[in-house]
Structures are given as structure tokens and as C-alpha cells.
Image (cartoon, rainbow, N blue to C red; front, side, top):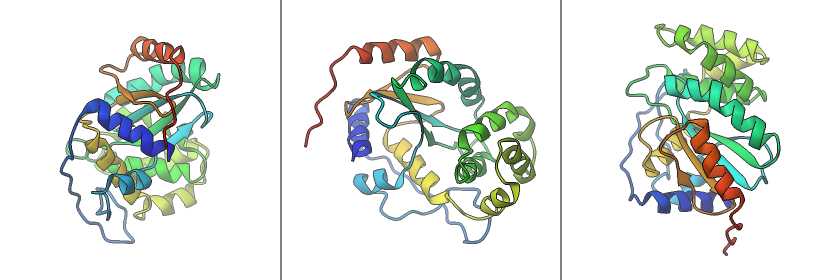
Length: 235
């Protein structure tokens, strides 16, 4: 239930109402390249249960750094390769914070982004998500302009240490399309419109949405939260 309270806090901070959201359908047994229909997402508790971030660091760390990201977004690449390593060194590796990645593929402007999100989840099945994230962002300018990227993603998975055959079978299915679609809906409910979007929270307290994603801005918020008392857990 921790995530449920965090989401309620984030919604309260942003102060939004329900946001309309619709997705297309995809036949089973083929590579899903766009959002799919997922039942129950109009209910916040069901939505929070279906949306799944990928966590790096101590799950009990006092601070949560949450990112909503798009693998085809240049700004997300810059954040992943320059800012995130600093946050990991100072806060994640020291147990002060955990980093949680949420898929938010901007499918209206990035044609390969939903498949890229699924590729990340397929790599995560083998415990290689963060390695794959680094490889795919380092090569973003290469694959983003291509008409077909499945082969590239299989190669990147191999570079990340994943078994390529297992990864390819996952990529050529609709695996994880439901989770990514739920993450997208969650982002819309939180009022997120662009990527990367960074939210920082302490314990079960309300999440603070940052207006910029440079290291100094995030560090300032984290340091201020670290000296604040831990919010009450509630019921």
C-alpha cells in the first residue's frame, strides 16, 4: 500500500481531477507497438496496483526519486547519462534514496517509444533493465531515426548482458504492454505532459513535482527533505 499513499499524495500536490485516456487494441501474439486496453484503470486503487515502476536501491530508503521517462526523448537521454549517475552515487548507493522508473512513452511524437519501453521490460525480466537503459540511451541518436528497430534492440539487450533469444521472443510478443499502458494512464492522472518528469517524496508524504531536472534542483529538494521529520504513516 505504500505506493498507493504516494500516488494519492502526488495527486493532491498537483491538484488535478481525472484525465480522460483511451488506448488502442493489439492482437495477442504480435509485437505490441502501441498502448493496449487495460480494464479497471478508471479506479485509482486498481490503477496503482497495475502500474509498476522499476526500482533501483534500497526499497526502504527514506527518499523516493520517481522519473516518468520516454526512451526516445532526448532530454530523458541527457538525464539518464548525466544527472542520474550523480543521484545514484550520492543518494541511491548511500541508502538515502531509491530511484523508481515509470514508463511514459510519448507515442504521438515518438514512433518507436512504446516498443522501446517494452524492450526495457523484457530486459528487466532478465535483471538487466538498468544496463539496457544505459545502452539504449547511449545509442538513441542511431536507432531513433530508423524505420525498424527490433534488431537494434536485440543487439542492445545482448550488450546489456541479456540472453538475446529470450529477449527477442519477449519483444516479438505483447508482453508488458499492459503494465506500460497502466503507467501511461498513471502519468496522465498525475498531470504529466512531458518527459522526463521528476517527483521526489519522503516516506508516505506527498510527492513534490520538480519543474526542472538538473542535478542541482533535484539535490536541493532531496537535501531539504532529508532534514524534515518523517510524515506520519496514517491508517
